[in-house]
Structure formats: C-alpha cells, structure tokens
Image 1 (cartoon, rainbow, N blue to C red):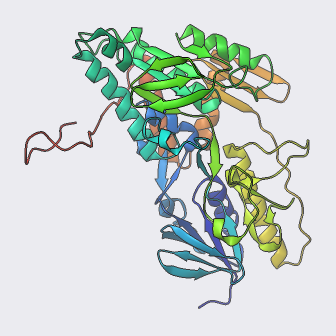
Image 2: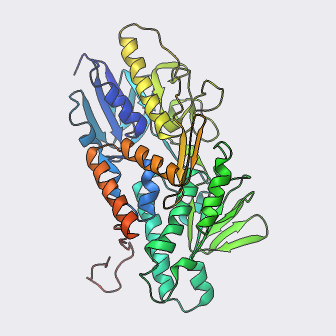
Image 3: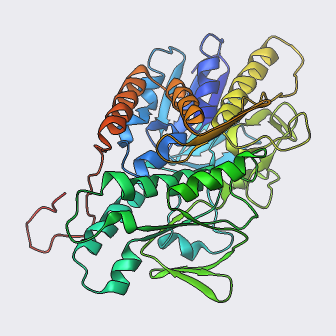
Length: 426
C-alpha cells in the first residue's frame, strides 16, 4: 500500500514511454502496462519487414528503458477491462487501482469491414507482423526460383502494397530495392530485377497529406524504382491468389501488404467512452476524456484537434508531445494548477522511398531526393530509444549502403518439418 498517487499507463509506445519518463521526478508511483515486453520504434518497422533490419535493432524491453526510474514499474499483460467509476483496470484477471489513468494503447490496421482479408494481406503494426511479411516476401522469391509454370512464377514475383500513405510508399520502395539490388545476384533461375511491385491508392495521389509538390516528386521517385502506381483505385477483394480492384480488374499476387487504414485499440471499449467510427477516442483540449478528469488518452488512439482545426496526425512526434503534456497535467493538478490545452508543434513530415530517395517537409522547407534521405536518416537515428539501437542501425545502414547487402534475410518457416523429428531449416 502507498499514500502516493498511482498513475497507470496502458501502452509502452511513444506516448506511454514519454509520459512515464516525464513523471520521473514527480511524487507519484507509475505503472506501465503492456501486453508486449518491448517498446517498438514503429517508423522503422517496415525495414524489419523488408529484411534491412532485425527486430532487436528497433526494439528495447520496456523494463530496460525504465530501469533507472525508481518510481516506475512494468506489468506484462493484456488489459481486459477499464472500470472508470471505481478507478481500476483488470489485467491478467487481477485488478489494478489508479488515481490517474493514461490510455495510450495505439491503433491497429483496419480492413474497412472485411476482417477476412487480413489472412491474405497482413498489416504492419507489430514485430510479428513485420516478420510474417518478411517471410512472405523472401519465400515468394524462393518458390519462384524452382517454379516451372510461367504464370505462377509471375504471380510469385508480383507484390501488391495497398495504401499510398507513408507506410505504403516506404514498403513499396523497399521491396523494389530488395529485388533490384539486394537479391539480384542470389538466384540462378530467376531475374529478381523483373519482380513487379504495385502500389494501390484509393485517392488521387500518394502521400496525399504532404504539401505540393512532394506527392508528385514521390510519384516520380517510386516510378524510377519500377514501382507501378495505381491511383483512384479501390480494393474490393483479397484472397490467396491476389487482389480484386474495382469490379473488373485483378492482380494475381502471392504477397499482399496492407497499409490502407487504422482503427483504435479496443482497450477501454467497455468503459463507456465516446468513440469515433474508427474506434479512436475524442478527448478534451487537455487530452482528458470527457466526463473523466482523471483519465487521459494520448498518442494515435486520441482524436484531438490542432490549433488550425485539423486533427493532430498519428505520428511519433505527436504521440511523444501528448505523453509529455499529459504528464505535465498530472503534475500540475497535484500542485493545484489550472490545466492547459494541448498544443501540437508540427516538426514536419518525411518518408523514405528506397535507397537514397526520400521526401521531407518542415515549415516552408521542402526537400526531396538524396538531401531529404540524409535528413530522414539523421532524424530516425536520433529518435531511436537507446544508444545501442542508434549504433547498430547506423552500422547496418552503412554496410547496406556500401555493399548493397542486407544482413537480416533469414526466414524461419512456421510449417512443421516434412520428416518426423527433423528441425525446420532456416
């Protein structure tokens, strides 16, 4: 038992970790609850999916991140229920009481009412997702190497990415780079440079939220990599053989990656909070839940408007700023201070498009090509959670840059071995 206020944080992502760290010197006891034991640098998750980095390069155990923080502890488990009235949450069939609650459980991919598509078109939100996508990409080339049927070989070497946002653009560019550069000398029976990469976008341009002329420049850079871009195109079906586009168009493909939409985590769904159609939670200006001054929502799960009246984007800098703001509101409340509205500081947007290609926008400055890629490298290394992550990622990127190689092209098949007692090979 303790007389100090108890702060529970659901989620060990950017918002949750930022809030916990900001409470380091506050007279409170902090508990971070997450169903996974690690903090994940999600902006580089696509590089795990495309074999450029290993999972440990962009993830760190939450306990390690917070081990020097005396007032913080970690609980590994799934949140089963949020009881706002009694100020408690249910985790692993046990109840944890709180005085302040921060919900920062993030979002997951949305299939717009077609959950059956997920089996054939995995999204990219977790390390498990990334490893499965990597397995599918690399195994497609392996199967094509020994496939004698020309049509099936073409299907195996056709990759479809659904969604023209930052994740979709980065995945499509990375797959094209793998085929053109990384795998070009590894196979004998197939020419990997002839792999087909298709990016499908329902809107009129890729990276539609970026200011002009960056979407056009991104389009040009993707095309230079050989990526086919299909705009104003809606996906109407996904199965094990490929993707249906509209009513009468189809792409036969063995590997489909979904990057088309998100929906809020189901954490807190039983608490009676208002939720938007996509499952995210609208909050007050100070990020508290309407009607619950002691409960906050931060990160991608929150619906909050910026000073210009537009929604704050679901990006890492915004989540970190929200986490710090919520912590400041709790500290201020303990001191009897008046709460203040959250003010998002837009530090710009950037997306990488394969090797030495990127676009970036910060204020009036708009960059593309190699200069934008250098800025992207610097920013992403800077935001990695630990010094070890920064060093490892920089070394791997340098190795890949010089030798056109990747050190993370290992595949562990999940299917049972063909021979009893034999271990699956990697």
